[in-house]
Length: 253
Image 1 (cartoon, rainbow, N blue to C red):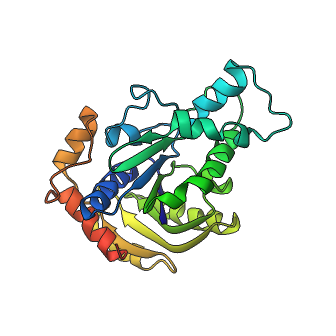
Image 2 (image 1 turned 180 degrees about the horizontal axis):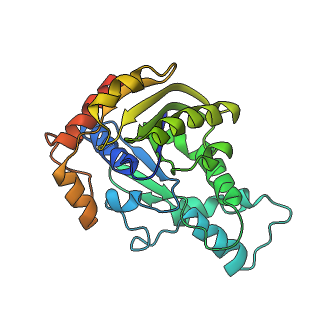
Image 3 (image 1 turned 60 degrees about the vertical axis):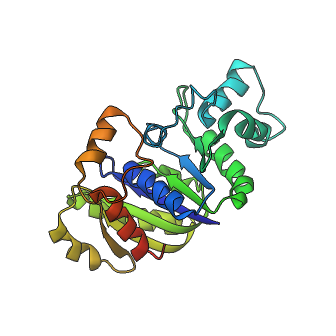
């Protein structure tokens, strides 16, 4: 089992990358996969063709609210993450043919994401061993790294955009991960679909962060994202999926 975390500033194409990465592993027969959406915006489900509400599933944040607010549960005594773990498997996990899916979800009540993050972290520690790959779509911010939703990972992919802020985010993300005690085997950068080829050399010069290439601009991918259609099952010869294949092969997959 390998855990791959994809992160980056908003709008760089990280969620579409995660979706096409999942499709690449499915085509290779490297299944089952577990896909995890840590982004409160919840874009990953749409891009992999899963509507949790329609499937009768709930996000981790919804499960917490339902358990401790809707049903009047208490957080005293047993840790909240232990108390709802069975509900994450029963009511939160979408189970598909080639992949399963969990989402952290949007937290509508006052307070930070500490409790949803902790619940998901504890659940993942017991669930992940049955999968070949766990693909995590992390949000643009770095707070989830601080809370160590995943403490031991094989790969961290940071999708960078065409700005100095993306390069700054890349360096900050690595530092936050390191100082938060997250252990990884490889930390890599990937150019987003708007990332100019000319900046590739700059990315290669960053110490201890390997640059794997860029995601190709793809009109079919862009149209599907606009229409809310799944990126699973795209023609693998299209520029987008083909560039993701080359990136993952460069990473050793």
